[in-house]
Length: 111
Image 1 (cartoon, rainbow, N blue to C red):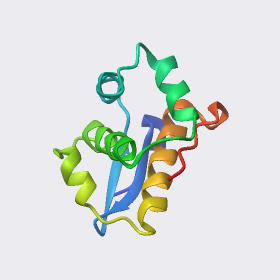
Image 2: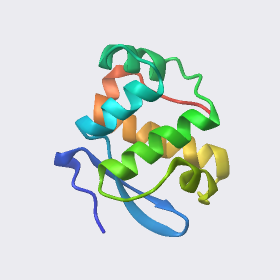
Image 3: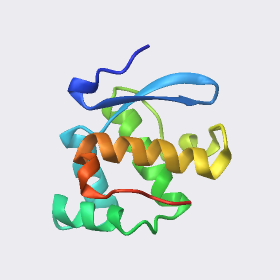
């Protein structure tokens, strides 16, 4: 399964399986609600802080999986195994955010 970067998708190995993730408009609206962000600018500001919790990473990855068409709950994402543990989760979220908002935005979550 390859990611279509023109559609804003990334590929990541979660639970030993390559999966596609994409922050669609619906997934971004989901994140706005979850983070109580007023708009996309507020989301970028939050993500750019580099201070994301484990729960934040789970929400971002979960929204990306759902945006790519998977039926998965955040609790399911939290139970998934990612190579390199917390650093691996942070890398997946960072790649997804960079793909969505552009690398120039300085979005870089750290575990």
